[in-house]
Image 1 (tube, rainbow, N blue to C red):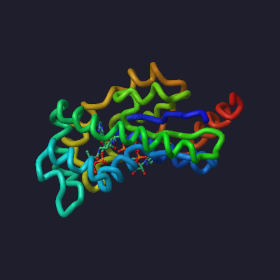
Image 2 (cartoon, rainbow, N blue to C red):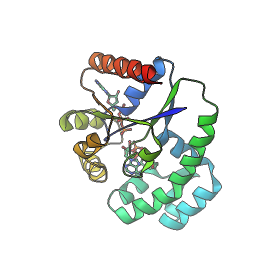
Image 3 (cartoon, rainbow, N blue to C red):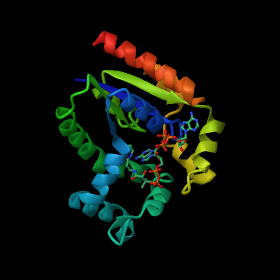
Image 4 (cartoon, helix red, strand yellow):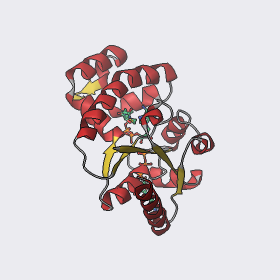
Length: 194
Ligand SMILES: CC(C)(COP(=O)(O)OP(=O)(O)OC[C@H]1O[C@@H](n2cnc3c(N)ncnc32)[C@H](O)[C@@H]1O)[C@@H](O)C(=O)NCCC(=O)NCCS
Ligand SMILES: Nc1ncnc2c1ncn2[C@@H]1O[C@H](COP(=O)(O)OP(=O)(O)OP(=O)(O)O)[C@@H](O)[C@H]1O
């Protein structure tokens, strides 16, 4: 089964693009969603996060997202320690998920595919880009986002130039209709090469 990694900076439109592939019948795995589910359900992860961040990591048994976001995006050491707790478990969850898929290839969407070296397990890599101002505009309309938080997250992700160098395809996500056309073209090329 071919694994197509789909990445891009915060607010570039990865999930939007992943859903376009889903509409073409491709199975998609959204690493961030699965990571969040594991952080909510796994007792081991919960215990380790409490050791790392203190009791404040969870409130009423739910992940204290504002507290964690505020901490990790200002402290790279803690971010890396948190990633080391979560990402190996997401990787093994992905492996099990992969065995059950029946589509001609799968899409693995991850914000930090390059940063955590997950790209090495992918056969093809797609990076989604959009102008910085557009990304910020889209993100500010999300209820839990501030300019300060967006910039802190951007500073912890690779820039587009570095990602593009290691990518097989780049999708420029400005107008949705244009994005859909790029998705269809890439999908057909991938299918042709299988
Ligand atoms: C830090 C958390 C609690 C912040 O939650 P919150 O709802 O405030 O923000 P949201 O989830 O929308 O995250 C905003 C963006 O931050 C970026 N981001 C998230 N986690 C990470 C990370 N570990 N490293 C770098 N960037 C990250 C992504 O672009 C993401 O879309 C949340 O992102 C989280 O649980 N992250 C850990 C899961 C993870 O590692 N995901 C990354 C892809 S596998
Ligand atoms: N081409 C577009 N035109 C208009 N709005 C868009 C477009 N692409 C994405 N959006 C909107 O921008 C926001 C961010 O998109 P999306 O969630 O797909 O990005 P993302 O890269 O997955 O973000 P994150 O890194 O935070 O997970 C969403 O509200 C989405 O509906």
